[in-house]
Length: 234
Image 1 (cartoon, one colour):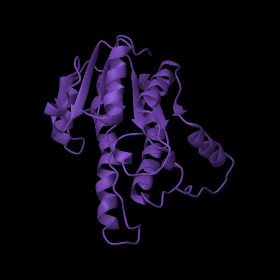
Image 2: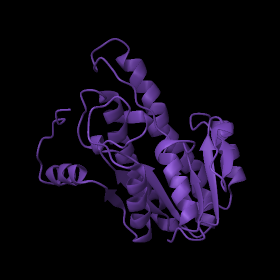
Image 3: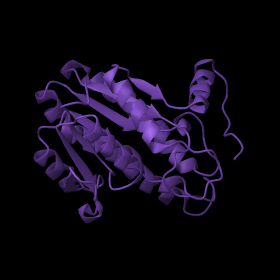
């Protein structure tokens, strides 16, 4: 599919990567861009349609899907990450449950709600924002790593489930992106605009998975070779 004349819905779009997705959709000629945010008043990008949305709230998700019945491209960008004391530390179970709610079940809920509209509108496309840590566990963010690994598997399953209705399902993997989520991490960070450009290029090329930086491509290659992966030093 092409972004030009598409009707795009982006979750978590009031800032960071989601904002970059919305902005570039407009620049590429999207017919309409819906942006989901828990607080629509924080959506300041001209030309978009703010939608009150918490991906953990089934009623809000259903209302968003009803409003955006003309959608042809869903970007599941909303996600959370919290620093932790490790999987055996205090609060690890609660934090994992909280992170799974947004990063896994939020993606599933949005897809279930929007899939019928995508099918009615010719199939369209669905992109899930995943991560380099879909493929190894980060010592600093082990719960986040678990949820992104699960979301990668979910993405693969959704690709099979939605293929009969001609919906293209794309997994986006990247290392550290320069957003609020990675603030405080001492690491090289990717420009959100470049990540989004590669994501949209992949959608238009009909790809099913895109690794936007060399580190992520190397990790994916190592995984395919059966190499055990440990988190790189920060």
